[in-house]
Image (cartoon, rainbow, N blue to C red):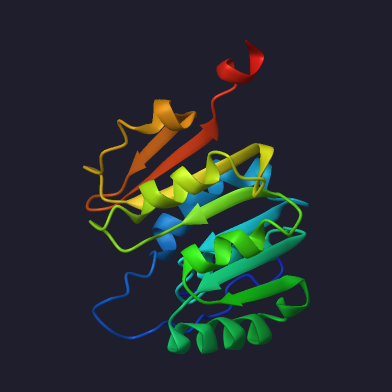
Length: 189
């Protein structure tokens, strides 16, 4: 795995070994960032269930103002810090050590995030729990894009009641990225 573009272009990243980890492939990461590139320069980026940190590091390399990483696995935390130091992007990064659900209330104290990426373990429906929290939260900025990496068959039928719209979905075989925004219609009424 490597950084695709930007200031740390082509630099290799270390990943956590094991069956519980599904690193986003370079090709999938490149497609993802081609889709969201206009959001990245100067943005505040939040990487939930960060793993090795490759998505947030890519955002920093491409010009994000800051990236916050939330990860509970100590091995992954160590790799995130090593990867940030190796790419020389650690001065704009914050690692939040702990479970996503224990960190979300703490993230309320931070400035809002423009891009929120989450790659929770598949089939546990954690994305629904995070989105339920975010619906009334100050964590996303008013115009934030939220990206969920999940299986293509993941059920998102609950989104309208949470106030989110799917703006795009990209399928890559056994995984997909679902792009969401807060539904403006309720606020405009």
